[in-house]
Length: 112
Length: 116
Image (cartoon, rainbow over all chains, first blue to last red; front, side, top):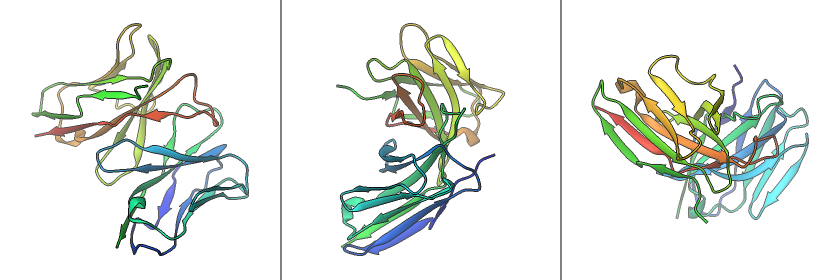
């Protein structure tokens, strides 16, 4: 069974701080996706990283895929209250493209 | 341009009753995926369907759970004789074709099932 462990599980910070969320596995993935889920809603895709070592930036969010395609990180610069939510990584492996393997999730709270 | 629609958004059932969850994929999407999210956990894959076919049900519990995606109408996830452990959020996602490693699955808002 493939597992994606996210750390930290919970994170409470003040607006303006920086943070990094990690997503780790012992398995290799064809690609890895990051989602944000707000209370009462479904996950919304933020980014897909495909190539080992790839770095993608989305405004204040920076996503990195590990060289070995087993891990990923999400870095948020100058967090805002609107960044509050549950962040989920999800891995896709060749041959099982129909099912995403989701991480355990990181719940982020950003306060004023 | 409606996204993935799920209904009901909230469903309360007593132990032993049946729960029927509906999912209407995005327009033009013929592939549907169901996931379950237990409290304070990530999403777990349950089943992948195309129109009139179950392609992968490796994540579905062997008993009491079934899914269909008929030629016409929404996809249905049915849970018979519900138990308290079935209480969870059930999410449906859709894609226009088989979701490859570059293809996106679009998620609905979920159905929150509470079993009393």
